[in-house]
Image (cartoon, rainbow, N blue to C red; front, side, top):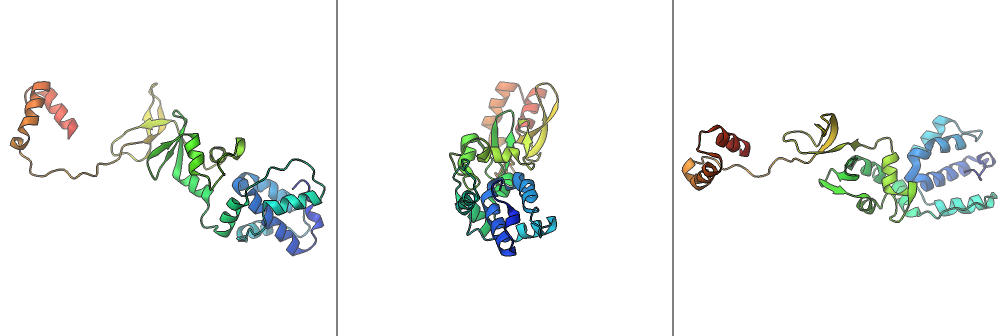
Length: 235
């Protein structure tokens, strides 16, 4: 964008074609780049802020992408280094705007700061940075580095959800709170899930006599405070 002077694209069609290309190329970082793109595009004499957002929302065709933008920048005299960008991610997003991999990534993960890992809500699994980047190759191709990794895109997004630690609290939601080692209430991922097993009904003491006998030997006779407390805890 630094190389391409938008004011030199006099026709409406040329300006929109360029905007299509910029949106596709900036896709993985569009949320953080949108202000820069707006400032650049509204330098065009016929472009207003409302016009810009209307057109950005309506763009669903990415037949032109990074490669075309690189060639255009070269034609306008840009000689700096330009990292090659994979157009496939941008094209997939632009052709199917209802399925946005960044939105999906943000909606289905939480970062756990004490463990330095991500929690995948749908599968109840923990992912280190490498596994997270591998899972989200539709956001950023694996092998990217620095600010261009899926991990960095997640953490820099204002929608990123972060919790302090992990806990297990029966009956509480997945995103909950707990007390840390210092007695301070902090945000947490709750790993507890309700049991899928149905309890057996109409069970008599005689049916579990051997188990009750073992409990008596370990904790004292039935009816004593310690034994009853343990049996209640198991229930």
